[in-house]
Image (cartoon, rainbow, N blue to C red; front, top):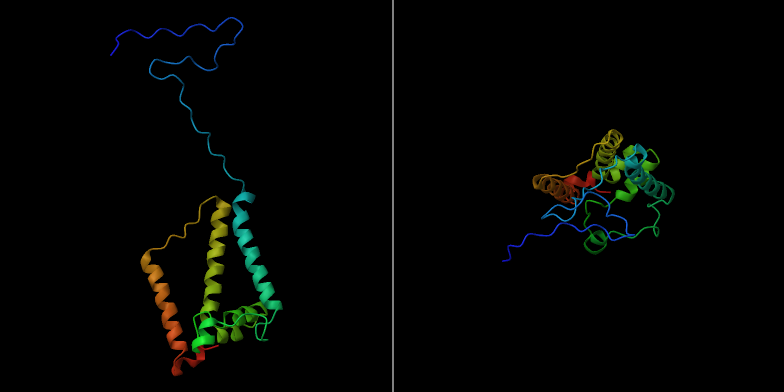
Length: 172
């Protein structure tokens, strides 16, 4: 190990401008670089994603409302229903969306009551999302595994009950 002292920085050569910023310190040749301060997003930018999601949902409901799923040939058949004859939790969902788009809630509940409940839950979550986005607060949708297991259990029970004779009122 050499114990010679480090030489001081030499002055700039004639005709060359001096280096910008403070002179380097021994052991730290360059000044620290700090990241730029975060720029707060404008309200329009914060609301763009929730508004875009709602535009997509309105477009999808508009399409399903104009192209009747009760007429054969417009939409594919549920593969589970086609191959097994059993109703899945989504069977009747398009007919339900069609009925909601036309304002017939009773027909929507008869086609798929779980889908109508899902539309309502989506509407509530979307309003909360918009309110939080307008205030500049992030929307967190992290759910514990128990919630996801509960949703799966509800879907399973709904599927089983709607395929049994006493649950025929839930069948589309």
